[in-house]
Length: 401
Ligand code: ADP
Ligand code: MG
Image (cartoon, rainbow, N blue to C red):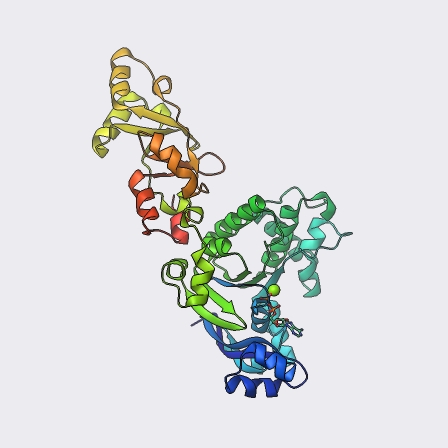
């Protein structure tokens, strides 16, 4: 069963929305309806479903109807026509009491700009929603503490919002939603106000959290790069309509119409695809295993060199077969023969990989923020990606370890 299902939802703002529906049926555009009847079409005839555990991105330019659409999902905005089902229950027919129950138990929302209370501590801000729900004090403390830990804010419980950076404040917004324990998260441009680096960190963190949480996330953005990075599927909106739904790959490679094409045509793929997208699994050896083991592993894998890591999987460098053989003879350790080479990070863009790979004699090691080895990029993968074939341009590609 679909977690969320939207059937032909339309929202017309203004005094006589039914007139708007009639005009839409006659085929008038959003612009024409605005001009003729003074009515604002927010969303027009939107149908889609979201599966449990999916990150569903709604993307489009400002004014295309994203915020209206996401607010139809919890009936913060009433549709003019059409229906919305959550876990198979038609919430668009529910009375106030049932609607409130569904909102509390199933759906939370994360907004842009955090909406933190300035005079409450981080902990108090996090458990705010639970307080409203009348959850008992110990229980709400426990859930809020857990949520703060999940988003990496353990230790900041008694801080005040203005003591935290923008990125950290956005994390509190996320923690608040997590503490509520709902299956569904609606995130309306939640990361859009953050500067690019922090924003990427937040995207990564959301993906990391999602691998354990399996929430159903509807994520709104006007940023194609963000949509590609985090979406399992993307719905593209224009003038209130959904003009395409597909995987990131489908959207890029097979744009459904001129509008979508226009959206992606300016995208230089070398600035979208990262090392994380095209890396493959890297064999590596823990350095204290010694040169004999190194030689054996190379032999088994048919390699002439091997990446080495320390005990915490941190990338150290590369060992050559010749050096390893020499080391065995002379009684040296692996540590002495590791050649340091410069790794790239999972976020490194294809555009920035060219130079590295043309100078490299071995595949490029790919590390995460902590310097841990996550994979490797071969020259062939870079060339394929440039030629328009991106075998793993999916979330699992980014996440592969
Ligand atoms: P987005 O989030 O993609 O920027 P919105 O959903 O906020 O777009 O807006 C979609 C359209 O609906 C816009 O034309 C906007 O002006 C209109 N709209 C949104 N909210 C209202 C409202 N409360 N009253 C009238 N028009 C609205
Ligand atoms: Mg909006």
